[in-house]
Amino acid sequence: MRRKLNKPWKQWTFWTSLTLVLAFALNTVAICALPYIITDKVSDDRLKSSGVSVNQFTHGAICVAVDEPIIEGVPTRVDSVVMSCPDHFVQFCKYDISKKPLHIHVSVPVDIAPYWSISFYAHNTDNFWVMNDLDVKAKGLTELNITLVRSGTYEKPGNEIVYSPSGTGIILIRTIIPDRYSAEGQEAIKELLKYRAEARQ
Amino acid sequence: MRTAIKVIICVGTALILAVGAGWYVLSPQKYAQAGIKNGPWITSLETGSEEASIYQRARIARYGLWALDKSEAIYYVAMTDSDEKLLDYKCNYKIEGGDLPACWWSITVYKDLYLIPNNENRYSYSKTNIVNNTDGTWTIKLSAEQQESNWLPLGDEAPQRGEEKGEICLTLRLYNPDPEVLAYPDTIQLPHIVREE
Image 1 (tube, rainbow over the protein chains, first blue to last red):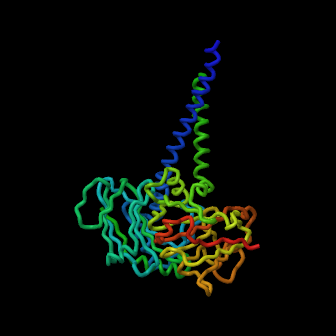
Image 2: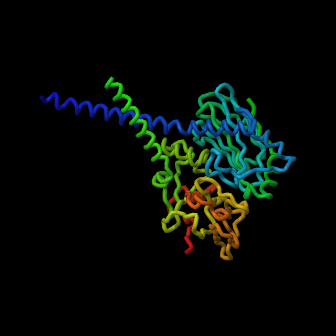
C-alpha cells in the first residue's frame, strides 16, 4: 500500500526535477551563446554590406566616398545594432587569427576629434584591449603598428603586441564626430577617411 | 509510449521555461534592476568587461553591443525622470546639468532603442556642441515641439496612430571618465531630468 502511494509522487518529483534541470541548462546555454550569435550575425551583416572580407577594415569600401558626397542615413529599425551612438564614426574589422597573427597599421587623427580609440573584442564581446588618443599622444605617436596574436602564442618583440583570448573577434576604431549626420559631420568624416587603417596577415 | 509522451511534455515545458526566463533576464527592466542607480540614471561597471556575468554579457550584447570597458567609457541609461516616472513621448522634459567628470560626454535620446528621426538631424548633445547658460550649467529641452536652444527632438511630426507609444530612454556616455566616476558611480553629480507640466 505504501509503495503504491509513493510511486506517483516519485514519478512527479522525477519528471518535475528533470524539467527544471533541463530548463536551467537550456537557459544557461542560450544566455552563454547569445553574445557569440549576435557577434556573428552583426559582423557578417557588416562585412556583407561593406563588401570587405575577414581581416580587413571597412575602410576600403568607404574610401570611395572621399571624392563623392557621403549619403549616410541615420540607423533605422532594420539595423541590427540598437542604441548606436550618433556621434561615432566607426571603422570595423572582423579578425580571424586562428592560423596566423594579424598586423594592423593605423594613422591616428590626434587633433581632429575629441576622442579616438582602437578597441579589441573577443568573440564573446569582451573588450580585452583598448588604446585611445590620450595614450597615443602620451607616447608621442601619430601611427600605431599592432600585432594581434592568440593568447599563449609567442610573437617576437617589435610592434605593440595584443593577445586575443579567442581566435576570432572584432576590432573597432571609434572617432567621435559630433553631429556626424549633419553636413558638417559628413565633411569631417571625409577628412577622417584620409587616415589609414589597414590589416594584413 | 507513455514515457515518450512524458519526455515530449518535459522537453516542451523546459523549452518554454528557458525561453521565458531568458526573456525576463534580458529585459530592459531587469537591466535596470541589476545596475547601479544614481537618480534616474543606471549603469553597470561590468559593461564590456571580462568580469561580467553571463547575464550581464548577454544584456550588453543585446542593448549595447561592443561597449567599451569601464576604464574607457561609462554608460548611464535613464528610462525615468528624476521623479521616477517613465519617460513619456508626449511630455516635455528639461535635462539640467553642468560639466561632467570625463574628457568628453554626450546625451542621446532613443525611442524603442533606436534614434528618433527628425528634420533637425539632432540626436544628441555633447560637451562639444552644448550651449551653456551664463553660470556654466546647461539645459537640454527634450520635446516633440521646437525649442529655442539645446533642443533634443522627440520627433518633429505629430505621431501617427500607434506611434504615440514606445519606450523613451536617454543614454549618457562618459569617455575617459575621471577616477571619481569609477569610485562613486552611484553618487557623482549627474544631470536631473525634470518633467515640465
